Image 1 (tube, helix red, strand yellow):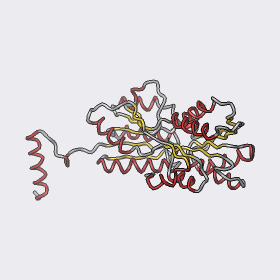
Image 2 (cartoon, protein in one colour):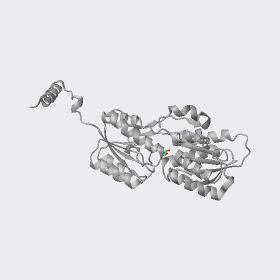
Image 3 (tube, helix red, strand yellow):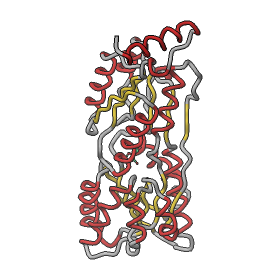
Image 4 (cartoon, protein in one colour):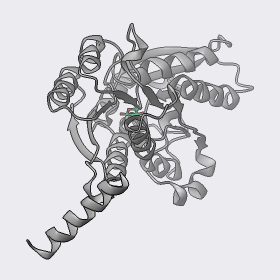
Length: 319
Ligand code: AHR
C-alpha cells in the first residue's frame, strides 16, 4: 500500500472511531443551475458571480444556458433531475408554465431555489426560496425619479417604454411599478411601449421605430434595462438628437456600461438591480443540504444612481 493511501485509510479509520467524516472524504454538493441566457451585461455578471461563488464554496456546479427559451430551461431542469443533483436553482425566463417540471423535481425529492426572477405556480411549496430584487420597487424608483425631475413642467410629457422579455417577471413588474407612480399625474403619457427583449440590438431597433413614428414628440425613454437604453442611445444619436438632453433617459440595472453612458452625459439615471447573487445562493444551498431553515423570500438591497453621481460612484462598482 502506498504511503498516501495508508494515511487516507488511517484518517478514515480514526474518523469512524470518533463518528466524524474528515473534510476531504465528504461528498461535494452538486448544484444544477439553469441560467436564462447571455442577453445582457447584467446576465454576464450574474453568471460570473454564480460560477465563482460555487468554486469558492466547494460546490460542484452543473451550468446550462437556455438562450432565453423556456423549453431549453425545462430540458435542463429535467436533465438535472435525471442526474439526481442535490439542489436545482434557476432564474426563470418567464413567470408561468413551470408547474409540471417543478412537480417532477418535488417527486424526485430535489429542492429548488429561484434566483433573480420568480414564478407564478399554484403551489408555492414547489420551491424552497426565491432570492433576488423587488422589480416592482425598481419600477417605482424610476417613476419617482421622473416625477421629481419633471416638477414644474406643465406637460404633456410623452414617454416611450422599452420593455424586457415578454412574460418575464422584471418586464411585468417594472412596468407595473413605474405606471403606479406616474398615473398620479395625467401630464405623463406612455405613447409607445414595446419589447426590446433586454438586448442592445433590439433596444436600438425598437427605438429607431419609435423615433420614426413619433420623432421630436418623445420627451422621455424608460428602458427596463441598461443594455436596451444603450442600444437606444445609439438610435437617438443616429437620428441627430442628443440623448439625455433632447430625450430624458431612465434605465435599470446600474451596470458599468450605464455608468460610462452617464459619465459621457448620455443617460440620466439608472436604478440598481444587483446580479451578485452567487454568494447568497451557495449559502442557501448549503443550509438546505444541512436541513437548516431558509427564508421563503430573500430581497436584495439596492439604490439609484443619477448621472450627477456617476463619476464618483464608478470606481466602487463591482459589475
Ligand atoms: O432579471 C434581471 C434582468 O434580466 C436584468 O435587469 C436584465 O438586464 C436581465 O437580462
